[in-house]
Image (tube, rainbow, N blue to C red; front, side):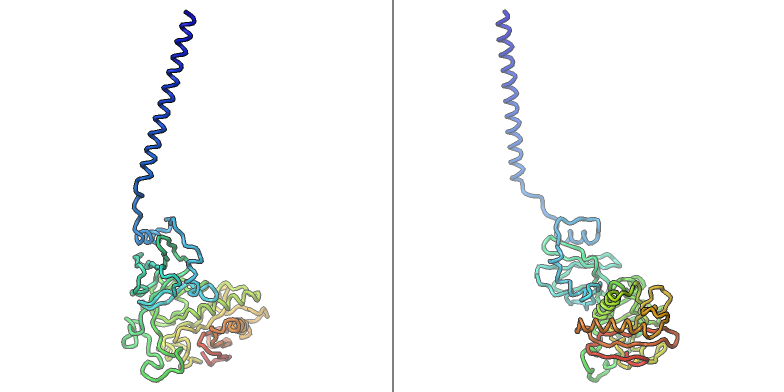
Length: 362
């Protein structure tokens, strides 16, 4: 009897082991079959590229799986100038944002005031005047350009009877006929529309759109101005040069930026305003360093006085910038305190060298 019991237990143990092995084999076979079926399933459909880019541009919390590195976006570098500090590109409707080395590049624009998406196309930048955020797309790779804005301008032809809407501009020197001395004195190509909402938009590291407005028609909006990116680039390079020389520059005040022909001719104090003032062409500004915010030039040379010698410190920095970047050559003028204002420096990018001091030029 004991031997018979031992054999029974052995047979039972072998039967249980066989059952376990058989069950494991079935389980593995079923899992392998299901895995094979999953591999043969078609992939889920990819989201539409345009919709994906739009959501990326509208929702800063979204993370794109594809990414454009800085090399792929290098075609935008010229828009930032030699300083790398320019933050706005001014374009007429239908023009290109930038020269594109890769024809696969596509821009997508979002109007800041409405949030509406305007895909880039063969027709160029959006036709409606305003400030736009920029995203760049190649296939499904996309990236928002956080440090650059597109500003679409109103064409010069939008000016009727010397004004656009309720804002008076006046007439440019050769608008009625005659040949300008150079292309830089031809009529401006277009006008930037400035509203109460967009006047604080940065156009470079240290300057915003409203800094360059003509100081007139205070209650009229929108206003219009002409502004050249080359001027912004030169001003930022001057600031960099001042900092190299050991000067702290936290704030630069634009005493006079763009002047409408109407204002340049008759508004305010007209002393020293040339009939062909570069201020009317958007590539000139009168500036002073005002770190303490008291409304006048700082003592840059640290001699205990604020006078024209401090304006010369800025002028000397502009001279060094022109020597390094000849394409930004222009006028540099030094002005002493007079008529309710402190000393300041005039800087422009007219295309040829001009120097003066006192109350002439501009």
